Image (cartoon, rainbow, N blue to C red; front, side, top):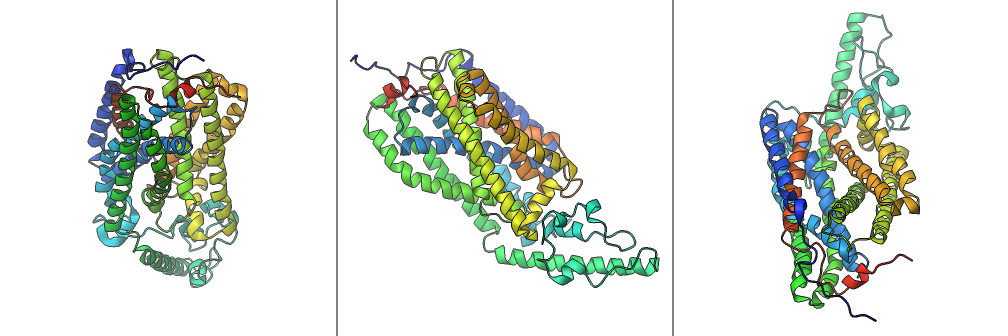
Length: 488
């Protein structure tokens, strides 16, 4: 048996055009940031929503990469050593995300409706009433004559989500009595309808106020900022600890660092799951504070893992084709990465369907409203359908074949589609809360400039780190096993 080859930190380095890739990302980030500031100063609420969308979109990739590193360390995986360092670079990008989170925290009063309820809203009181939202309002929309509108015209989901109305108090559902027949006593009917609408509005406000009072212990600004600080402290600790173990080993070749990373990965995985879940609750789910779903954190986790695997495949393929990773990452590695991406995408679909099915079955108004905003109005309904097809159906058919996962061009196409759909998915998470109702879809150039800013700055940080360290963990004792990896 031949002796293992010796590798040092100069064996796999970023060279050629890729050595300056961080400058390109920095330019994109600077251009996006300048555009975002110029466009956003006149509408801080829109700026806040667009930045939040971009932030949670890129954060999902960084957290998904962290999960990949945690699991490889936890299982003492040998096959993934040569691709793990790329994931570690994207995990280390969490340090940049701390700075990129600042606009979200500074603009929180303009973004999160429960802060207006708490008394931090703008002077106009734009969100002084956050709802038991459009689900109830649309169900009781009035015609000019005071008649309840047809549910088919208002988008009322009660027919689609049985029992949605009957869960509400009778005075909320029916008001003070039946509206007069069309054409009878028009003036009186109009006045009666106005009084009825006013009474229903007060009932909605009372229900919403009660919900907000119950959640005030969690949804308050001080606790919100404290939790955000805790999340970033934990994630920064993960990034510096795991990245430090790995890069230090390039020089020392000390196998004890591998064992230390493995020991830390078990409690690290627990902390990762807790912090990611509550961050998803805080930064996305609380955009509709009356809505709740205990599975939502898992939903955000799933889309993060899928998107991070897509990025890992695309970046390592680019570096392999350009030369820096040539010989280190093979078809066998991509086959396994493709299987993981395919499997977690099926898991994402399972979680998404489970959340929808349970909410549809229970038909509670405070739960169904989230899907109401995304399905009962044409623009968002189209986006919802696009996600079903583009994030699951087509990638499932495209990637299910073993041969397609081993065909690098086809795998690259599948990864690119899933990464693009990840952006759409996060947009679908966040932006329906900006404008609710039939006019709720409103794309703005800020959405693009904020995404350029966040992704560009994050990418610049990641690729700059690649110029400082080896692209492969040359000191890892399992490196030879990964270089000789063959699928059975």
